Length: 377
Image 1 (cartoon, rainbow, N blue to C red):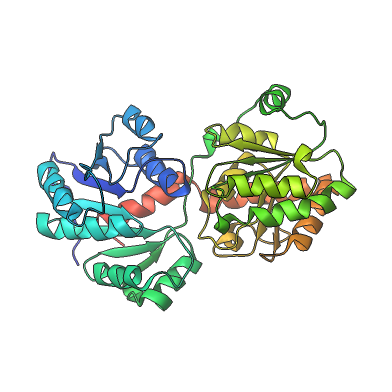
Image 2 (tube, rainbow, N blue to C red):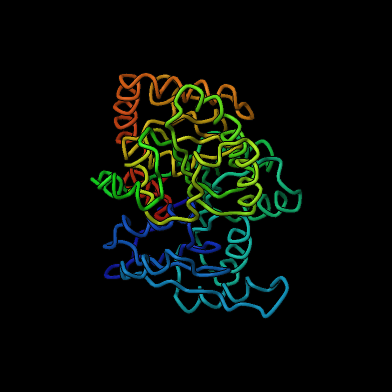
């Protein structure tokens, strides 16, 4: 296929298509693409299929339009792709970049109707095998995509294995973040007071959706063994989700409620990462979660489960500590080890910062996507 170059005096018109711009790793990728895209070559805008979300205003503050698809009064909107097609024609879009299943489906069908020539799709990881209808739909849409991107080598392999997407279409581009947002100085005592932390000891942190995928129950089960060795530890859980009430009940049943703070959904993650002494990622499955990269950029030591793409960033005993999923005993042992060895924490965070700069910056990610938009990769 030939390269696509912007016409003289005209930028390439690029539309990012996502469910929303709410809190989440996928949304952070979209936001970072908007922040770091070469605006001399690309005229970028964003389409949200379901709702705008809290990051919509941040994207608009960059001077980038955010569109919300007209919503059906009730029930599933099986003709959403027609609305997408109308917007694509209105914007005279040259390239679409879709994120996860529904945007891939509605975006691709809309692009075909609107005559958009370049379709780039990113899979931000999930548990495979997924529902058969989703995998079949994505295989079908991949026939029309220029490239399908996995956010980690693990995700790319899963797409080939389970969705039978052609290897020649698959590209791996790790998620990237803007490190400047996380390399900040905060008043730690003030932040402790704000969160209601009464203990003076180390702080363990996790900032995720409170869903089964994130494995928070195993971290709670690890806490008694951690508190036995480090009784002044506090665990801060930042996030919301379906399991919040269940996890709060579990913390009470484990008699650790006075050492656990459920802080709810937060927009001050960069500040929290400066407060945390260890970031813990007990997930059961992942792609490459943005929060791990954010912790690396912030200089926060990491304990994570060895699932999905985690191991590409958290290299065991080099840039962090990896443990098996579903294993609260190993989780407790790794956390206790880091709490007891400040020199190990310093060594791991130094190596993590170096790896981050080489592989996971937002600018590096965006330059690779720009090549796809221009069909140069």
